[in-house]
Length: 246
Image (cartoon, rainbow, N blue to C red; front, side):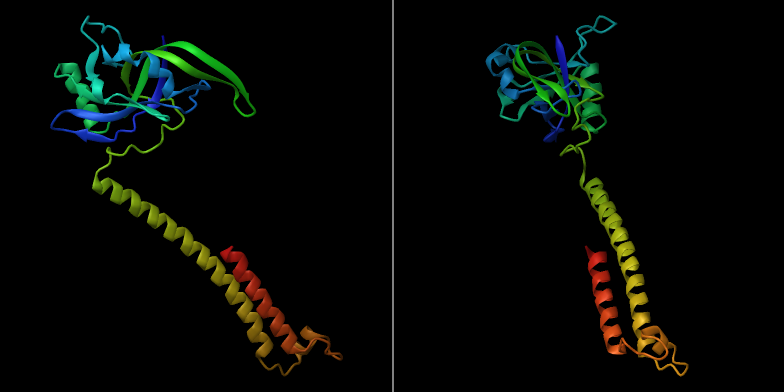
């Protein structure tokens, strides 16, 4: 039996009925360079619906001899789309079921994986990943609750596991970080602008010692009038602003 790990994108948590809506499998490439198409479950999903068990970490028997079943997928809720295999899980009222219900309800666990028998597949070469195996037909045996997913999308945020206060804190942090970076960028830009303005002020200030004359064209031959120098400085200022904003 093979196992594939995926992040449970929980759509809703119903505390009254002790159920959660979740995604068991997606079409993403996993860390073993395998892609399990949701359509691969279509032909054999009937056998799973007749025994839709949800196990604790793919265990078929606990060390104590007790059942590892923590609940079941409601048969009518199991759906296969182009992108995912989704289901609604009903938690058992056993001690183990209650333990897992608490972990998922409170957001401490968020991952599921599927245990299946591969029946048909194809291999193709990828320039970056090497060979990728695409599973096109499998027999789903069980879905398990697991603590650590290995799918590359495991860092995605699960809708339904963050309350309003958590979402507000995430947004506020993002805004604060964005404003900090923007302020730093503006400060850098202002520094460059002030330097250019100082250069222009020097050109507009009278100079009894004729330093400006030397700066602009030499002591005897003023080849670059102050007006042209000011225009040049204004152009430099304009380019500086564009580069800072770009």
